[in-house]
Length: 348
Image (cartoon, rainbow, N blue to C red; front, side, top):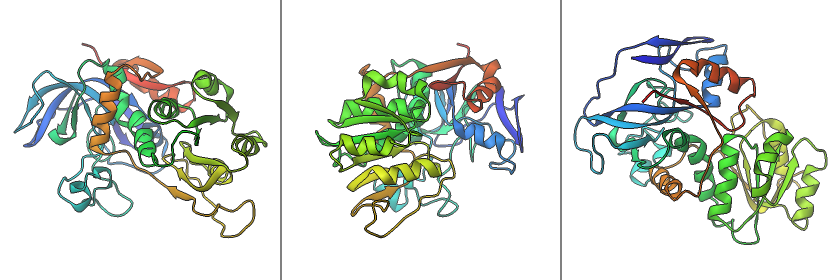
């Protein structure tokens, strides 16, 4: 079968690989669409080997069930599914508590559970073998839209869910970085909370995309941006700051605008450094404020997100590519040409 495979440092190629045979507890899924993520860009661009050579890329996957090896309640041959990107063990204390994204059966404190396209073969291929437990029915959704839900949708959904107690009517939420995840975050905040929403980005074009969905847009590079947030909140700051960039500049901005006992959530992976001060200075983190690095989301949250998507209340700006153009999709994303989410759509 055709696949987009990591061959080693700086080398990703369209190749032919063997069609996977699902082991017990797994299903064979015929891939209908697979998202391209910044993770794929980072893997290819890294000067060191980030993942095992020979790994098929792709962790945002939608397809149809082709074969099931073992019991699979609620699933049937031909059913459309999305695949949760955290292939957790299901038996550790975190998994049995419903926190599969924090699975303890990994290689250590900095290693997540097996992830398609990173530590095991992913979905940028005609077929993928995945644990039955990771499959979420997604009937009725456009496969290209469904494919981006397990990452671009799930990451902000999980972050927002974890701070729902702060996001009451009258509260303020700030989203930094209005790419594919940021566009979902804005919609989810509107659908799930009564918060005032402020969108921030380094470029005006992404802000134009969400301008009608938010209460205020700000350029994060504007020297007065933090002051604008404080002015909009009576000097108090934002109850919730979702930093989807995670570089040093956005982390400093997050710390400058978060309210006392507010929450900073940083899914962004841009090698930023957060400077923490314990003082009474205006530049210090206010009392009670917290900073968390959320990872992915739980299995239940993906089920809930798919159900919300099936109501038609969520949309995504998708840039579609044929499988033959998958490498160009990675190029375009790396070059900043994709406004929204890049998705590879497979032939029917």
